[in-house]
Image (cartoon, rainbow, N blue to C red; front, top):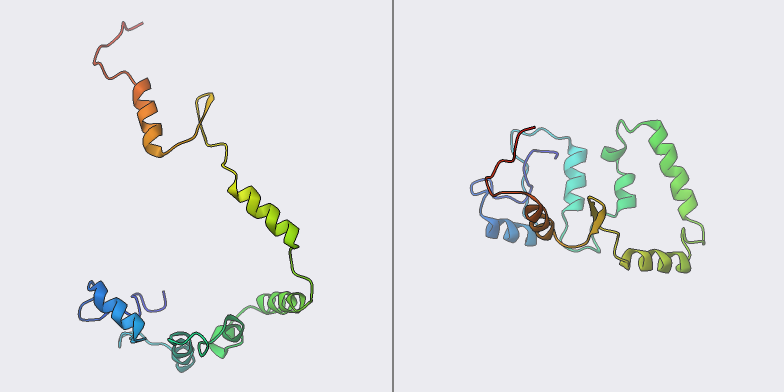
Length: 145
């Protein structure tokens, strides 16, 4: 989004996905010469694109980085400070029981799509088959009233 291309693409061979994967694995990225970005932005990217996760910049560190904070509305900074202060408490935002209930609820199948008056559960191919069964494709035209 910053430069209009993927950072790990080979500029000379952008469609070669093997090269792209190799460049990702070796953290070999490039910023096109025609793209003008600040030194702070380049420095932040160099901290994000690090192979070793233990050495990579964290989200809280990114949120404190000068490039991230530049021109950030005061309201957002205040909200972030409030959220950070609240997250530092010992209480988790949800209890274990609430989390288990949410997981169980997510495991239950939904009602499905309603086709006419009946509920439909299946794939979109099944839905298309059902609809085709209901459509007259005989070519016969009934009387015009």
